Length: 417
Image 1 (tube, rainbow, N blue to C red):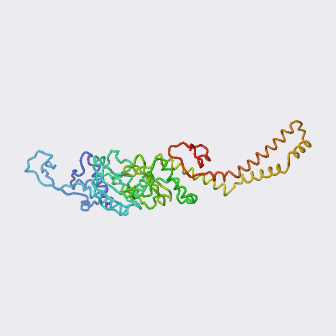
Image 2: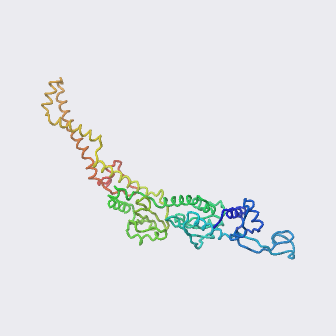
């Protein structure tokens, strides 16, 4: 655990040291540390407990100039041993994680072998496993090969100007702050939004009713877009083990025919809002799905399919007031026209209106109107049934042009086929 007072002193020791000197080689005298504590406004600083963050060493000192013996030209006769201290960086890193686990958002932690930095820890954050690796050397940070998309975060003991992992790293002070939980949660959500994209609400009633058709449509889409589709997830996508992704909700894995190291995992379940979602892998690594052209095309087409099919269902189950009124008017007009014949129309026109030679045109026009009204009424009432009859869940392969008319785009009579 790191107390607030100890954090202040450690911070002053680190920030007061030149970036050109390794912290492991920066020596402090006890008096120097006590002075730092005083300048930080700590009245009763406990040096004995603070020593748990220090390494104790003995250095040759000069009695005459009160400097390290290597820094002066005085004879060895005035040399004596003096106790000095360096920061124990691993102890500081370990205590930082312990504090974040004890009084912060992390629920547990275990030490791991550091890959690039000086200390690495595996921690639990809610339902997620996260890794923190501590760095005090900028060159080691820039050489590191961490995977933020696998929730591996670098933690800086010094404020480097390096751009490495700029969007994903933390400072050790942030892990001790009261708002670290919110920052980490935001970071995890941002990463999961990049690597886990939802494209349909799996438990939404309408989608639930058509799961089989939608699943078949998605599978067909990838096959036509140049992917080999398989339901043997564990066999063809060992990457899920590395990232702790469950194969239980997985539907199938899609492997790019031209680039076999590019795979798209299609899953369903309650990972994010009970939706269908995708993960994308490339060369064994989980990568961002944002702005992926295949996913964007799939998502847009499927959303359009679901929206169009729902509108058909709504038209079939509930007729709007506007259609009810229009239908009633058309029924009355059509019925009236059909109960009279052309001779009766001619007689009515002759009796009430002087139409002269235009009489055949007018009576013919009424007859045509009768046909148009009847046809319009038939189309109006039968259109939802016609749309349902020709509707297809089949989607167009990625990159293929689609008709502008919805009824053609969603029809079994495919464009260009």
